[in-house]
Length: 111
View 1: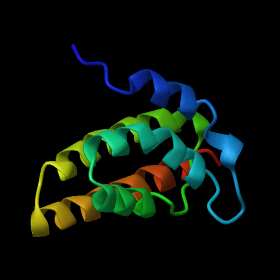
View 2: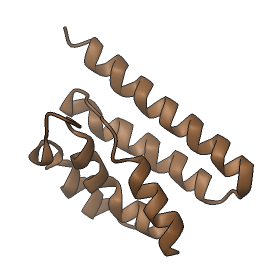
View 3: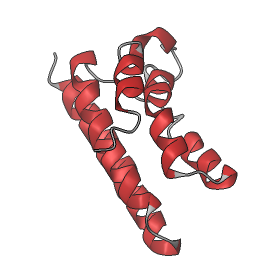
């Protein structure tokens, strides 16, 4: 079975808050953990840049929930990478909506 970049992603996820900033909170750490998968799913430079850009957004959640959200996003990115044109765009919009909703829900439940 091909393990892919699971170990590097796991190790990078432990550093999620190491790239914390006021502007994006955990966004850059999340992108850093997700990066090995994005490079695998999008080997061509332009789609890879688009994938990196879309995950450079604000992201904040409980650190213990980040791994779950990261796994869900990896699965959704894989599905999106297999699609073309408008179907890919729709899949990416669903992915970003789900990512934002999971982050918002898990950070709101901590209070």
